[in-house]
Length: 297
Image 1 (spheres, rainbow, N blue to C red):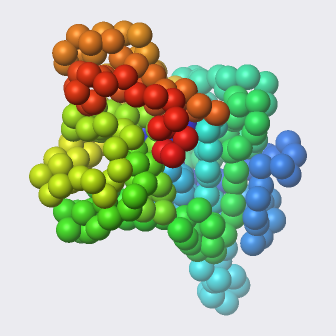
Image 2 (image 1 turned 180 degrees about the vertical axis):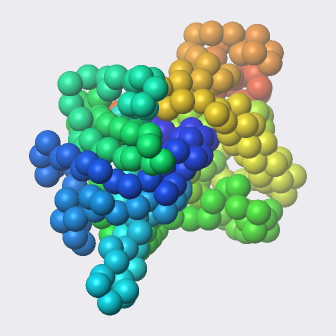
């Protein structure tokens, strides 16, 4: 699932190319992916993209209002994309011939853009067996249920240690707190594993059991890990971001490999639909965690 660092890099890439572009094509092969639309999708054609931004794990295109004859307008519209577990996009620069091919045969939508003589294309696709990628056309991003419920952004300059510490009154496991989008937005399974490994904390420990020093350590580590990943991914094309993320992982997805810090074997707790990875030496004082702990995550 795409998370905060690669969505941020993707947002920057698209914003640089599409701000000021005119939307020239909006193709939906079926209405399945479109979960809400305040206006018909085809009514966006001819309008200008004001900016491309991020809310948590959501990609947000701000679309300029359609000017009326008397100069009045109804305000901007927002095209919101939720990639869910296995969605992503491909970007085509039709002017230069720099093409990226969508993986798999299914795509949820295709969009075309024109900007200063350059034509661009985006294909939104979902490679999962269960198609979770969703699109919304709304007048405010907060009209999308998932965005309305988002907790603070962990890299927001105004999000400080005191506010972060209040999250750790929950009896939920630490990993669960980091992944809970209502408590903290943008972190998923992969980066919660990476943050906890770097902070040397067990993923199944109760959040409320952490003392002030541990809370501060995880707060600092969280910002360092996310900021470092964003810096590493900056400037990469959408087609390069998934592999860049995979290559940057130290324990997530590394079951059976040596920990890059201590050399112990990275372990896994697998449960329905997902899994977590950790290093026993670095995180649990050598204890091999039982599978029962993961379900509470």
